[in-house]
Image (cartoon, rainbow, N blue to C red; front, side):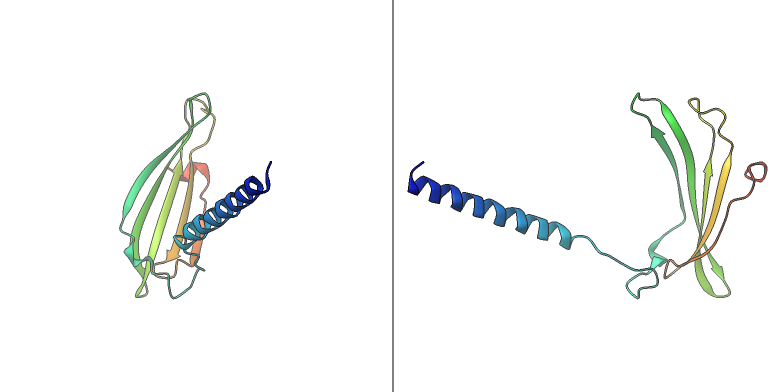
Length: 124
């Protein structure tokens, strides 16, 4: 390899490294890191909604399913978010008990206020 070829290769390596670093920096700018309780957090934008989540294994069979529901409420004049997650048996896991997780968060700061998981017989 001639001296001019080595210089060209070195320049290309530096250019590629610079472009890769610039792309990584640009990607990191679209990510916001927040701390619970930060004044930048305002959960009042969340509206009541629900979603069913289905998880499939590598073989394409459904292996898990649960529902998430959000209610927006009030506790002593303070907005709160109440989440309910209910899991159920599926064909690939018929012995899975019905399960429920209830969580309450501050409706502005997202600080968790309460969570509980009732026994399976109470989950229905």
